[in-house]
Length: 246
Image (cartoon, rainbow, N blue to C red):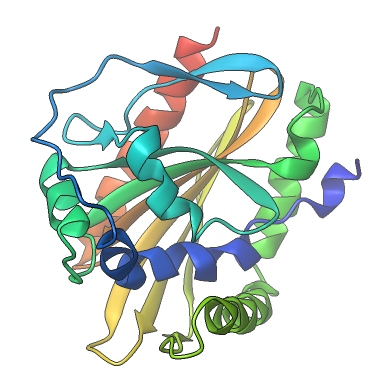
């Protein structure tokens, strides 16, 4: 596999779409779980390995396989959803059919084409450098292509589906960089028929047990404190995943 062509930014429109469409998709679920307790780190199968993935923060829990299927709709075809985290009160809302944007949530995905590929430290650097370039000059073009793909897919699922419009992205550059983890940030507005929602996202690419994982951390953008939370939480989450798999 040519890891120098590893891409993440084109996947963002599908992932942002979960912010505004998740409530509608989840309304088909009939059971609403009670508020969950803080979980111990769980393990997930990735490329024949069991990888431990702690929660990104103390107020988020992994939603479990029964409800994770709701988010599968918004995973790009090139990726496989491994884990999904959100606050228990938000899970209650979306499984009840609410349509308000999710304040904060997080996803863990693995690239299908690389799931069974052993990635050493040198190859990971190639991946991190490739993603860094994506969040540079080509970001807007990649997101536009992703927006077109998203709206096509939504129409395929439901001919009456509302189109998604994404505003001009505001890249935040590299949030942090370490030998086995690197993170990049973006602020992006997204709208359907309702008010525009401005989201901040950290995209964390890391190497755990010689497998590549992509961690997406989302928050509704309010001010600079949102970016600081995203940077701090993203780095702490990456450190926790790496420590749990040493």
